[in-house]
Length: 375
Image (cartoon, rainbow, N blue to C red):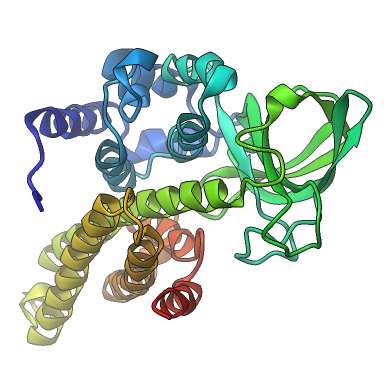
């Protein structure tokens, strides 16, 4: 198996790194986080027009760069390093993942809009009772005349406040937790009957409680087959899980680098605290967790197209969730009280690490899933 990046992939990483280093420093990010909009449309347009990264995982026939999961991994790692809050994961990885897999007229219409930076997609899948079970759905679709009607409530829908479209999972038939009878539809955010309650998240993002009340739509809104979309949902969520593992690699690397720099500057008893052996050992342990995070992410990403995809994704997420906690908590401990202050970037990396730890399943969930997949 080849672990080397191609020249095009290396150039992609370098271009994203340069752009974020020049325009997306911590102070600029904080202004955006604390602003009314909660994101920066100008940055999103630059992603589309200057860098072209919104087309990184799409085929050349769609106007993309002809890449795939590795390109998503590269971009997501740089997003983690800079704490980018713009909706690459929900729009390109998840929205693009569904559309590429399903194909058809809806993909032909929406994928070019994603690449151009015009479409923002929010993934409305989680429900208050569902935990991490993608099939546990009370949101329901019923046939009505020559169309369909959607009713239900989705919780913590990231990027919903500025989304142009919602990807919604819902039950078309069967019991609340049955694997059969699950569907996914793509609806414009302006569709009558959709309402939101918006709020900020602890890591600087924006999310919403989204309510669907007698939302009418046609057959053309379905992604995949009506009533048999659970396998597709699981595939795309695994792709998204691998992508947040890549983001985690960027986050833990910055936590380690920031802690290392601080230990060289902070003095105690007339010496930099980085000279104390106990802290040197601790930061070596942090570095090992960083390198393992990078390696596990790469392995999971390379396996996304294979039959044992789910097992490798769960193995990676279980390990990386534990690494996020270890590196994040040690970074804060070594910094002391200022490690959780709003003025210092390290505290914001810790918050994002904490959120990624539970995103698409925490360590315990993925351990149980791995065990079940091993039989």
